[in-house]
Image 1: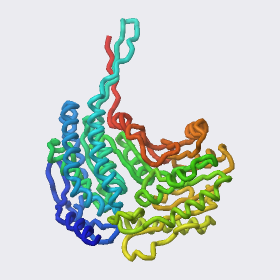
Image 2: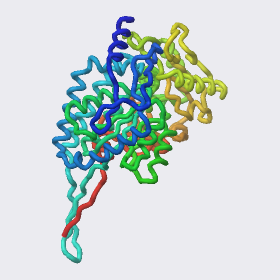
Image 3: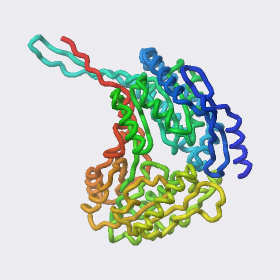
Image 4: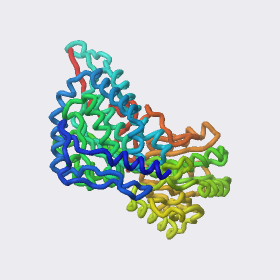
Length: 492
């Protein structure tokens, strides 16, 4: 195992990372900053530190390249995306160690989702773009004759794509895929914690032949370059995945120039288990908070609402499940729960745990750091019972391996509790009653709902949030359309 870790570090250290601005690879004017492996706390690479001026230069380059790129055919754009996807898959063996080391994700998760999903999102958007067409509208009789019309979609222009740290390559591909396919240029700004894999995507896009300025990438450890890029007059749209607080800042920055926005923000997913549910299946699905990237996922089912008749049983089974999970080295195939991204984020998670105890929730599993792990930003899979919606642990997004269980009496109370939250990104319903499942799902004020299933999404389904969870929708054709302006063309 030590050999594998050393090999990973050596692979990353061998790389030289630069910014891509207007077709030129350049050093960051602020030098470099270290990228730390969350499992080992060792430096595994260095990312360029862009200046505010470089961020603005990247925005200007994207703007300058936009008309030429928009004039290319859909076929040309799709072919380049397909070529990039093929190249990503060819390079799986060297890309997997990079993204695994910088994210701390388990090797299993990295191989399954971080790299191949990135390629799939590029090819899927290429295919969808090929099938897009103008929409003819029914002719209408007017005093001057018969009026024809069609709805036409134009690219928005230059798009700033800003992503979170949990799935850096996959999330970024979900933005640049539809943006480039529909004729937009992009300014890529990955999360500061793990930008190396995203730089590799930009390198591949450059290598396969995307014209200068169509793809630009800037990285930085602080927020100033990203803020400058999002506020730049040259940027026509901001596509952001991350916290609600940052989304609010982007919303304000976009207002003066009326930028188009696609914001996928925080979540605090309600997870409703009725007394007729398949409890074994519901417990496994609920445990995804712990087993899926250490709870660092926006749709994690962290608010566990259980009907009173089975509440004690579910809490007991969840407690047993939590204590049986292997926490440790992400490179070990036996590991289920890896670290969280940084020491600072671990501190935030631990603060949420302390608040839950102070508010009166009962800690029944976890709550601390694994005693046998001296290094790494680990948090034990944690379960609180006898929670209440008034507690902070039931209201705030933790983004870590922490669940709070809350009992409910009947369907009406379950829906009321679930909707009593500022977030509305995702929800879960567990029941054998199909009619009730659909009725409850349609009553939840949330962008998507999974019935008797896990966290996986149909990739063509619309994805986004109600309330403080965001603006707009990603996914399939809905995501493709989000990067376009709708134009009406009429004639007599």
